[in-house]
Amino acid sequence: MNAYSSFQKHLTDELAEIKSAGLYKEERIIASPQSVKIRLQDGREVLNFCANNYLGLADNPELIAAAEKAMHIRGYGMSSVRFICGTQDLHKALEKTIADFFGTEDTILYAACFDANGGVFEPLFTEEDAIISDSLNHASIIDGVRLCRAVRYRYANADMSDLENQLKVAQAQRFRLIVTDGVFSMDGNVAPLDRIYELAQKYNALVMVDESHSAGVVGKTGRGATEQFNLRGKIEILTGTLGKAFGGAVGGFTTGKKEIIELLRQRSRPYLFSNSLPPSVVGAGIYTFQMLEKSNQLQEKLHENTSYFVEKMIAAGFDIKPTQSAICAVMLYDAKLSQDMAARLLEEGIYVTGFYYPVVPKGQARIRLQLSAAHEKEHLDKCINAFIKVKN
Ligand SMILES: *Cc1c(COP(=O)(O)O)cnc(C)c1O
Image 1: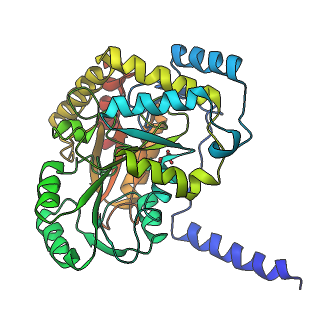
Image 2: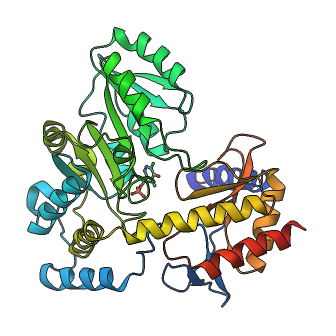
């Protein structure tokens, strides 16, 4: 036996185990642009209710034109990291645009928010410091914290008395950072930033908020959780993605206090050792934020859609998690039911995903829907009627 044959067996066993546990993830293939109405490879046209396309910008013609224009004037690729020869005027302009949008001092771009979170802790904190993290934080935060030598604390999701207890213990360290998602992706709840900020003041801690699911969605003008709680400019570190509400292409950022951003440019490994974002993405990114600066229409439509949908679903007898964002969890509790129901909904032309353990806690299976500004009333009604039909 060569080296690979025994490793191969190990892998096929592992894959078989994933399949027999019912946890194997199949990818459904789309043969159209990302949108509300998508065409699957088998020709079926379905309505999409599971994209992070909150503002409906993923196939927006103006963004496509902005991407084309930027590519035309600044080329296709950068072939460099930022600090060697990978920084164009466009990158600096997008960084400033993002800082203006969030009311922060400076911004650093990454290939993805996964990288922003992966590269934010290790350069800033050492074994003398403490990182206090919400138990439902995104995987990229968990991984980023693992790469850092700081002492780790965890508090139960949005549980402020638990956070306070952790903060008391963490007084033993030099600096403390509380880190939380702005909106939690499985329930759609918003982190109680007002109380987190109060506790941070009381216990001398810094705060970091990952606005990936909240930016463009929550806050009066879509500036995220910091806007919702009147904390613009007060949170030391924000991270976010261009891959959800803001066009959905790719790209991440950290924005906040200027000294933090300056040190990240010197030391953050995913920034130093990974390629610069391409001009098309950067140009369309600038355009996106400028567009949202001018009008709040898309966010308003998103909220109208969410309220309408949630109201109708509750009236139809569904068990809906109280949402504070554009995420709507239809609670089914039973894993198999969540899968069967999602499959039957697809037959009705509604594309949604069922989630169950270990993505959500045991016995908390659900279908998670994400509303979009691009949904029209008729789409929402079709979805609600399909739910009612497959329930019976
Ligand atoms: C989606 C998401 C990320 C990852 O963003 P990418 O830009 O796709 O890497 C990070 N954090 C949170 C909270 C997210 O929801």
